[in-house]
Length: 120
Image 1 (cartoon, rainbow, N blue to C red):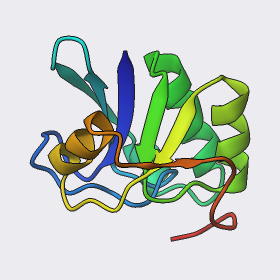
Image 2 (cartoon, one colour; image 1 turned 45 degrees about the horizontal axis):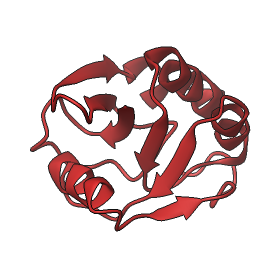
Image 3 (cartoon, rainbow, N blue to C red; image 1 turned 30 degrees about the horizontal axis):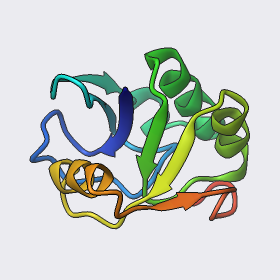
């Protein structure tokens, strides 16, 4: 199973990014073999609008079946949930910590957006 994590860098030691649409990167972690790939989200980090939808499309295209982030806006949530991707809220310092929280089932599921659009 692949899980997408919002990140500020390219490694598990990178800061966990609490933003979804404007996260710098997505780390797609494969829970079965412990490997990961990185998706650069830089174009959406600076986007004037549409960052949430574009970021959600990246996550859907990655094949992730779950998403771990700090906050999820309404337009992104619509795309994520329509694709059948489960979303979880984490308050972690690093991506590695968020991965551990996910593995131990310590995360709260998101059922809907938890912030308004254009949240920074």
